[in-house]
Structure formats: structure tokens, C-alpha cells
Amino acid sequence: MLGFRPAPLRCSSRVAHGRQLCGAPYRFRTRASGEDLPPVTRLTAEDACKVLDVTTTASFEEILQAKNRKLAAADGDMDKVVEIESAYDILFMRSMKRRITGELEVSTSVRYADVPSTPKRGSAAKATKQQLSGMSAPAPKLSAPKLPAGGLPVGFSVPSNRQVALVQAGVFTGLGLWALAQVLLESPDAQLADTAGLQMALALGYSVYSLRENKRMELGKAAALTFGCLFAGALIGTGIESWARVDIVPIGNFGSPGVFVAEVVILLVATGCIFLV
Image (cartoon, rainbow, N blue to C red; front, top):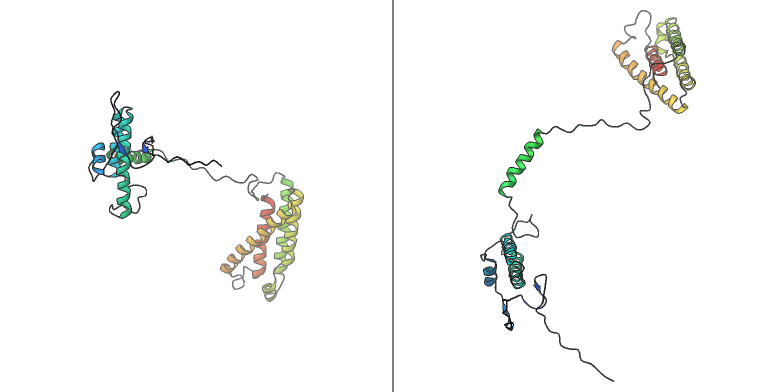
């Protein structure tokens, strides 16, 4: 059976993107016509500094600027480009080694750089100019918040049918006068216990019926609007009564706190039934 022996690997002196494929970087020189390439020479850190015209204590930013300047001056000379890239690699690796070993102090807020970037002289003036121009510029107009597509669930509207509004006002006025007449015919002790519950119940029922019949309102919305007016009237009436204290200082022959609150409730329910939609 035939066997084979792999050929030994040989390092190539070709470069890719300015970096040697095998071994350390080397310095090349342009050979004359018919002249053989002389043996390569290993670059030291001092040689690399001389190639880029930088000091041994140069920062990474200075090394990078020197590299770019040298590449621009090489004008396409591949030997010069290889030499510049090799020198840059050596200084770059030395800078990274100094950073890893702690020889180079770098702020913890700086990452992937040897030195924090310092703003250019014109940057501060430019930033100040932008701030001043921003202050002089007119402030953007603030748009009002948009309402939902359906609008608010409840709105205010003047009744278009005057006859229906008069009927509604008459019904609620009658209920209020009924409660007032009833309490005036009672004794002072009976007035303290009277709450005009029947008149309030009729007012609530008529409000729901009228909203559905005259304004074609759904039952849920009509009930919610009516009971909302009930709670508002109860709060307002209780607050006024706690200040007026009709049980202690009667208004004529009227001294019923419960009926006083009921009258305010009927008034608020009537207002909601007539003007709210």
C-alpha cells in the first residue's frame, strides 16, 4: 500500500491587510531591478518608533495619527505600507501589554482606548454655539392630548326639544314640591326622620326612563349618569346641610336634614337628565 508524507509547512512572508501571516513583523526595503530580496530583519520597538516618528512614550492616539500620516505619504508604495503597518502592530501590542499589566493608568470609564479622548479646541465653542442657538430658537408647540375616537362618555348639551325639556322640568319640580309639602305638614320630630325616599326613587326612575326615551341612551349609560348625579347631589347636599344645620336653625317651618339633602339630589338628577347626553 502506497503511503504519503505531508510536506512540511513553510511560513509565508506575504501579508494580509498589513499583517504578516506567520511569525513576527519584519521590515522590508524596495529591491532594485535584478536584485534578490535580502534577508528580513525583525523590527524592535525602537525601530517601530523611528518608522512612525513617535517617541517611546507616545499615546495610542499619537501612534494612530502618525500611522495615518505615514500611510498618506507612502503614496501606494507597498513596501512602505508593510513597514508602517508592521511598526504600528508592534507599538499597538506594546501599548495593550502595558495596559493589561497595569503600567499604563487608564480611567475605568474608558473602554477599548489607551487615553480618554480630549475635546478639540473648537468643540467647546461649537457646543456653546449650539446651546445658544437652541435657546434662541422658538420652543416647539405642544399639542393638546387627543381624545378617544368616541369622545367623552358624557357631554353637556342644550336640549333641542323645548317641549320635552319643559315636561322634564315639570316632573322634577313636582317631585321636589311634593317632598317639601309633605315635610312641612309633619311635626318637628317627624321631620328629623323624614328623608323623602319615595320622591327620590321616582326621580331616579323617571330620569332613566327619560334618557332612554328622549335621548335614545343605552340603559347602562342612562343608569350610570343618573346614579352619578345621585352621588354628586348627596355629597353637595350633605356638605351644605352640615354648614346650614337646618335641624338646629330651621328655615321657617322646615327643619328636616334628610329632605334638604333629597331636594339637592332631585335638583342634580334633573340637571343631568335635561342637559347631559
